[in-house]
Length: 148
Image (cartoon, rainbow, N blue to C red; front, top):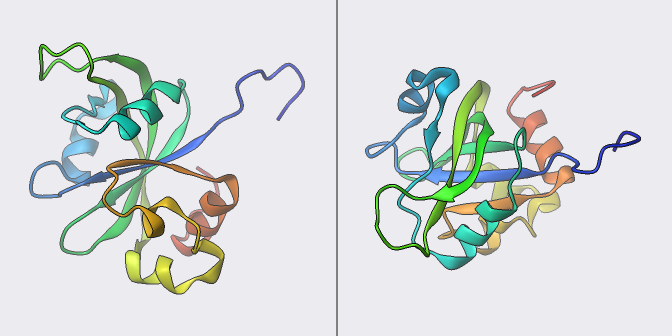
């Protein structure tokens, strides 16, 4: 954290079924991004409430390849989810930053003992999850990403 930086960047993972919303769909939204709507889990919603502008996240395809396929950035903090009238549900907006050079599969993540405590391993059904700084660096290395 740099001097005067009150909000250090945090890291997240966003899971999506590519048949419903995939990496290519996210990329097509450009800099405007897209709201990460439809989340109906209190823990996932609460994680989104913690997110701040500029935080980064992995975009994870939860079916088929089951892999981290891209990196996204929070471009709008938590706000009401426009897909429901229920005020309990909120979402953030994310925009695509970069595809990974090498998709990082769930099997590869599970095989790395350094990632055994990762939420993706411990709570695989949670659609929005935190990623530690160490987990972020390990997966970026596995994905062939030097800086994102």
